[in-house]
Amino acid sequence: MEQLDMLWKYQDLDLLMDQYVADQRNSDSRKKLLKLKRYLVKQDNYLVRLDREAQRKSSLCDKIRQECDTIRSSMETEREKLSTDEAPTMVDLDAMEKSGIEMKGQILKKEASLKQLLQEMKVFQKKLDDIREKVARAKKDYINVKKDYDAEVAKMRQERAGVKKKRDSLGAGIDPPLLTKYRNIKASKTPVLSVMENNQCGGCFINLASLVVQKVRNGEKIVECENCGRILYYKG
Ligand SMILES: [Zn+2]
Image (tube, rainbow, N blue to C red; front, side):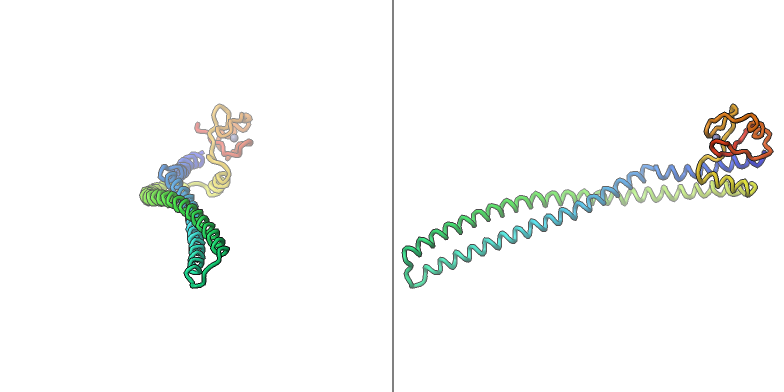
């Protein structure tokens, strides 16, 4: 049947068009691009978290500094009491000495934790800088790969459009109901046409009844495989 021969050729071009899309979906540059994108999104989120943590540490530093200042000014007040004309009693002096020692101890403790915190921030900052550098490099890579990818897509589209033109001009000679049937089957399975070989459907490999085989061979009617629904094609 001439119509089926044409549809067979139509299918070849149709499958070639699908292949262009599949190849592009699997292209190395697309994979690279997606990988870089995932990486950048992940690092962006990470940077937001690190920034928040850096801010938290920095305000903790401020708080400790403020507390030190408060203690120092209390010490200053105590000292000023000593410089007034009024002579302190021994009990006063004792109490003042005791609280002086205590305040000094508090300051030392706070200064130690401040020192540790500053050290942590330094390490933290280094980590942030490292990530920012890596992200900047990945962004540069992304731009370059995107350029390759866009060129690839443009080339693919052009080639595919050429194939589509050929396919459509071939399709113009095919009976519209047959083409509609083809498209309907294509919506759920591909390829639509299956070659009948050794009395089997080439799509699902089921053995066909001899009546069906006869019908397909004489090619007067369009015969679909009872099992998979493909249009059976006999190359002769
Ligand atoms: Zn079948």
